[in-house]
Length: 301
Image 1 (tube, rainbow, N blue to C red):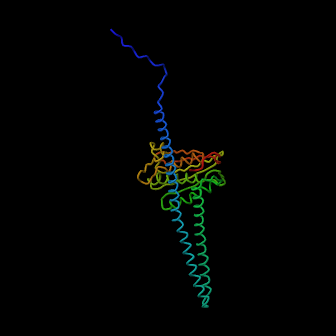
Image 2: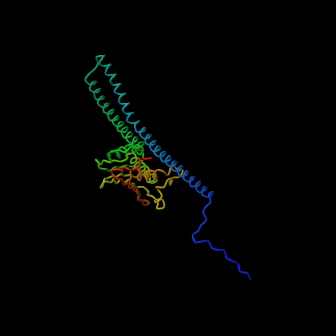
Image 3: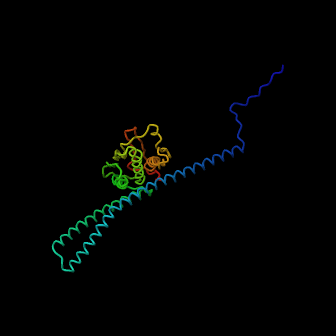
């Protein structure tokens, strides 16, 4: 009976080398993968930039609405003063001016001038805050800035949008804390965290408060944004910084706000951001970043 010969085993570890055509195919696939990665990265940058501009657009709308009140009051007071002055001129020319007319006119001038001054001061403060925040948000400049002043400017532009909502906004931050970093990135982070707290934490509840606290410790800034809203479900807590993750799909949520917060916190600010929350017990975001940004950090994209 003939025995079937077994095939001679190849030397251990010896593998057939890929052909030239296979190598070319692998290189083409790698090149396509790199191109798709670059396209995805560019698309993400454009989306984040759109998110920034959308947030700035909301600020512009709020400031424009808020400016209408003090400017309208100043215009009304100035018009009234003009009419009172014309009446006074007629009385002076007609030699019918008496002591009571003069007293009434002086009181009107004093009251009208006070209204104009207060109204224009309010408008000037809004414009100053808007200019500071808008320039910072659209600038990649690193600069020295006072932490409390930057936060006050930010809140001055957030308050008008919250004026007609049952929401209170509080700030606790010492003065005189000088930072050397990117105020535009910090402003974006605070804006997005406050808006996220109002939209996701307080709106479902119908009321509540947002508290911003900041302090310096050993060369680092610890900034917290906390609310007493509905909190975050445990299954969502680990995903909130993911791009495009939102619990308000189809309701105006882009899913990029908190991703932008994380990108700015870990990028130009050279820090970190964490979240702590329980359902029904509110949410607290903690941003920690150095007082002086490292010299090798990238500017905001």
